[in-house]
Length: 327
Image 1 (cartoon, rainbow, N blue to C red):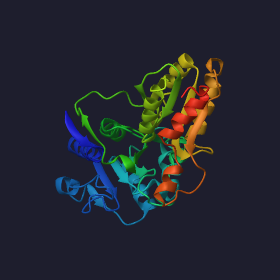
Image 2 (cartoon, rainbow, N blue to C red; image 1 turned 90 degrees about the horizontal axis):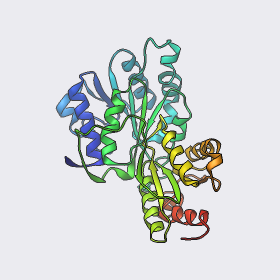
Image 3 (cartoon, rainbow, N blue to C red; image 1 turned 60 degrees about the vertical axis):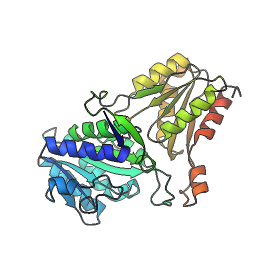
Image 4 (cartoon, rainbow, N blue to C red; image 1 turned 120 degrees about the horizontal axis):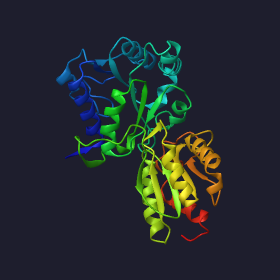
């Protein structure tokens, strides 16, 4: 057992994977001498050298393209994009190449790479550095998608992602890097793609992931003070998606809310709520409700930024209305 920040758990996962497997390499802008834009790769170049911790030019397309080629020839690259906002510049390499190569080559070769990046609000970084673009990835067949909320999951999910035979996009929320937690590094992690039920309650199911998990848990705590008990599900990965856990809880309880920081329209919350409505229809007492980000660019203003994405008050208030104002 060891106390780690979210940032340190990611670094430990990288270091452990690189120690165990010489084919694991790290590449990206300022990942070496500078230690990464958010400090995740600090000191890795000291421990593993510049041949395995590679500072690249400022070209997202080149970073991901190099990672795809390296993965096809036997390495296990972990590429870093400073911000998920830049993923659009990599979508040929990522969406047309990495995601399709196993299929296009009839299974003869794959792309065992990880694309680490970070997204979300919380640092007043403005409209071009604060987005939640996981729906882009979730929409693309062939790409796995992990979005850990806890420090333990930051470690264990990254270890699992590096071992995955297919490309994994690994999105870290920028507001979680300093969060601390005691982690058992030797613990057996849950199976890859398994959601976690973080709280049990019999009135409502709240499905979420990444930083919104904590807003959902705080909302559930406030609701409990008013006699409403919510089950809170942390998806952990969006592809693979553990819909069995969602279905089991929704069918038992009959009410569901999906909470996402991404934009409301055509987002992750839309996909999940549609699937719940389709597959759990006979068990629902009320329509599924989405609580998601506003369909607007993220403001650099702290107050406007916070107001554009869900928080505990909005989640709890929405839940109260779903349950007839009991809260």
